[in-house]
Amino acid sequence: MTKIESEFSARDSLKGYLFQCKFALLLSLQKMENGSKFDVVVEAEDDIIFKKEDSVIEADQIKNTSKAEADIGDYSTNLWKTIRIWCDGLSKGYFSLETQFFLITSGTAPSDCAADYLKDDQRDISIVIEKLDKVCEESTNKQNQKAYELFKEFSYDKKVNLFNNVRIIDSNPTIENIDAEIDKKISNAAREYLWDSFRERLVGWWLDRVTYHITHGEDLIKSHEIRSKIDILRDQFSLDNLPIDNDIIDFEIDIGNFSNHDFVKQLELVDIKNKRVFLAIRNYYRAFEHRSRWLKEGFILPDELDRYEDQLIEEWVICFERISEKIGTFAAEEQKVRFGKALYEWAETEVIIPLRPNITEPFVTRGSYQILSDEKRVGWHPDFEKKLKKIIVGGGVKYE
Image 1 (tube, one colour):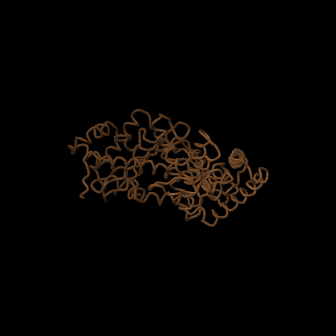
Image 2: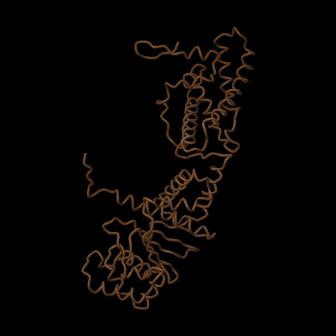
Image 3: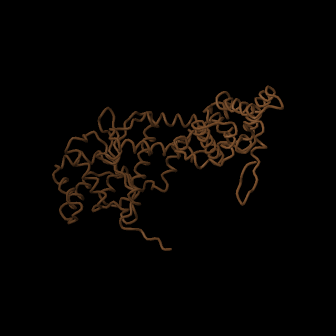
């Protein structure tokens, strides 16, 4: 089937937004290397604004250009849109003479164009102004007219002041390879084979944070928030810990999807009901999904998980046998149900066995017991193995 892109497709806009957000994080990480403190504003008067003590110290325009608009030549709409934003901000007092301006693009500044003379290796402000003044006089591009009008209102000296603070940085990472640049900035925070996992969590948090920042009208994001998140992730990625992910913790569970699981049947055998069943399902889901992710991403190996489960089973056996001795061999069903309830309450509230020294979240132990219960390697009712024996009836499944 031929793939047809609608002219109204939001794909390019989405790519641009994601690139801008990721680049804001990359720039922040670069600034943090020298220990500086700053505030970040995304999608304000400029794509990315850096502030210090309420003053704008840097304004960045970020362009992830397509092939059709890759060059930022003298007549480029991307170039003039940026100049318009800067001129407007200076005229209204949002920017000051101390504000540094950057146009950071994945495109290129062609040789001998104005943007080429704003790069650090061959800066010449007089040539820049001469070329852009000429464009304003000759161009009939309606899309750029407002930018031309604003620029012409600036005196020569004011243009000099502006471009003294402007830097063009071209041929920068595209959205396809910006992750590799972020990896360079987090390389000391995690072992190399976990860089992808570390970056995905950091970027995921950052995108959520920027979205909240924009949708709730917050003025800024403080640099210490980024440092704090990196510190939290670094700790979770240590050898004595494991990452706990909010997308799993916050997932809304449909308990109907679990009603036929054996661990739920086990709870029914000992008359566990209502909210406690939901909590058991939630613990099962959280433990199952985290364990699967930890294995997939290489945080743990199967033998470590096997040893952990052996430890859980050993503790269960001790408690199972202790309670079993109390009720004897010929206990009535009512006593057996009480037995099962007591055993389950032990697993539910009394036993927390860390998978690693600093991974002490209760759902790991509680959910792992539900997983073992689902596999019928542990149980709550004294006769759980017999009662959970499945038989095929008329193409369906029922329990004995």
